[in-house]
Length: 454
Ligand SMILES: Nc1nc2c(ncn2[C@@H]2O[C@H](COP(=O)(O)OP(=O)(O)OP(=O)(O)O)[C@@H](O)[C@H]2O)c(=O)[nH]1
Ligand SMILES: [Mg+2]
Image 1 (cartoon, rainbow, N blue to C red):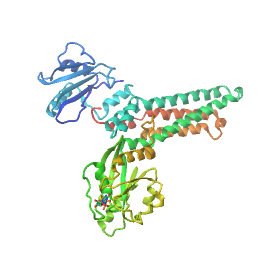
Image 2: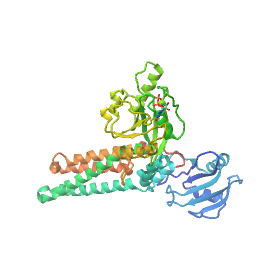
Image 3: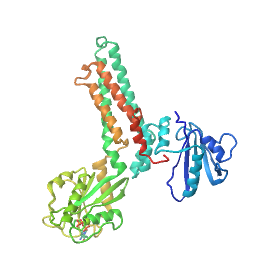
Image 4: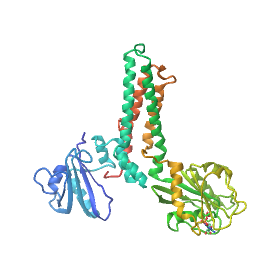
């Protein structure tokens, strides 16, 4: 499939740099390579050449390295030209203007990848993986996006589709050969297979919560009473004096966000105002914001000053601090423990780390404890993790529902014709994941999120 027109775009950021990459894709790629680099005949494919780019007006525009890829052996599946010119915006603009004069148009965001998808070079999960890879904020997100790019999710979905197709074939055999002709044990096989497929689909659904945590980062809200050491913690984890620290309770008012990397994970760390009853309208607003931040958190680090009585925290906040999502830091262990520092029973069994943010006692283990708490309680990474984004999640749930419908209340008691129709619907839903999407709008939205030049 080809669009007929030729697109071009700068694939590297605009600005001063050693090299800038301009990509051209479409039928004009070959003639432009010939004209620009004064070649006789078809340009040599898939090798790097050096030459002066001659503009249509006959002036040399820049000394470039270029590569020509013949269709379909290119990223987009069309003929492509990649030009590495010097990274000066003036040169880049001159070359791009010249390409437009030669008949190219500027690519839309994601248009190169969309052409790759439409030409069957990649499926939709791989196209999404490219966007995820570019945006990945942590090593784990990179690893999973790379696996997805190699087709891990696509393969899993194809396996499931194959299994459902098998079931469909068996079910249709019942339609063609009425039930009474078949021995009863034949009825059990498909039902068992169906249960297995349902279990696999359910397993896939469980990965759904992880994708935003890995791709966008884990929103981690530091929460506690005034003066507990929340801002001291933010500064230690950020590695610089980001927040004001003072002995006066109520120092932090507005919340402060810092992105940090802990092991393989990216955390969006939010320091907040200390929670207490306050008559000061500004502080009260800060506390209100702290509570709002806490409402949208993926993970909590509760900071508590063990040299003071256990603070009075609102029940609604305590309810949020579940053991899966919370790490407790018992701070100021350089000071003696207050007789009324009695950990609230609701938090008594949570993971805790005892330390002093002032003397540094216990902080060597801080990063590893945060990482292991996240892994043990929030993310549960496993060997076959897959990045299930919202779009995949919606399609998988749909497939899950149809498969359950196919199973019916009493298994094969459901009329086989209806069962076959449910199985077909499940196959269609799974197909949406890898790309059997008819809806142009969904494709426009998906590729519109890419950067130009991809
Ligand atoms: N002795 C001792 N003091 C500490 C420790 N950690 C923090 N502090 C001190 O406690 C005070 C409050 O620290 P912050 O980090 O500003 O506390 P906070 O929780 O951000 O306070 P608010 O912003 O007011 O809610 C400062 O004077 C810190 O130097 C510690 O481990 N031991
Ligand atoms: Mg503070």
